[in-house]
Image 1 (cartoon, one colour):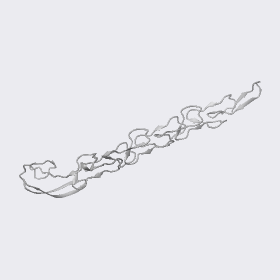
Image 2 (cartoon, one colour; image 1 turned 90 degrees about the horizontal axis):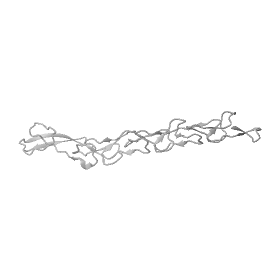
Image 3 (spheres, helix red, strand yellow; image 1 turned 120 degrees about the vertical axis):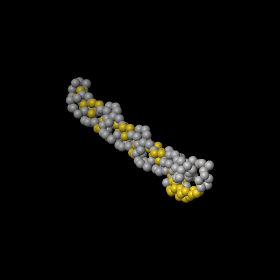
Length: 219
């Protein structure tokens, strides 16, 4: 409250401070404004209240604090701004005290996001709170978004590039021999004028599955 003299200069009348104001000194003739980061929602108060976690206030004389919006949070009291959710996290609600980790299969590479993005086809993510996704390795592919693992090529098929998005990227394994060598060099090229004949054991990988058999070379 604060004192106001009546019209004749007689006995002072006390008036309650309005919301957003306070007075803790009986001799003051006016109320003071609540600072930023604080508020007062009642009449006749002697103090102001701090904005709670998840809220903020960037103007003085406030009767309330404002919720932090989606993509933002506040974990401290008496704050004048909210904090952005960092990369790898998101905030899909108002008044958050902490942001949430992106779930597996999703990521966030930008601050202050309300939602995380799905990993694109050809990629995956098997760890929470990530800022990017990983390419599918050779021998695998992914034709769906938001996945936590990649699909293997079926036995007898393989792909040689990372980040493949379709099962059609998996091709039949062809073991081709360098006719100038006594063993498979892994060169993967075909020679039409081989003069070597006989059999060789082959053991190549198809999506991580061994494929074993024999290859007859007739030159």
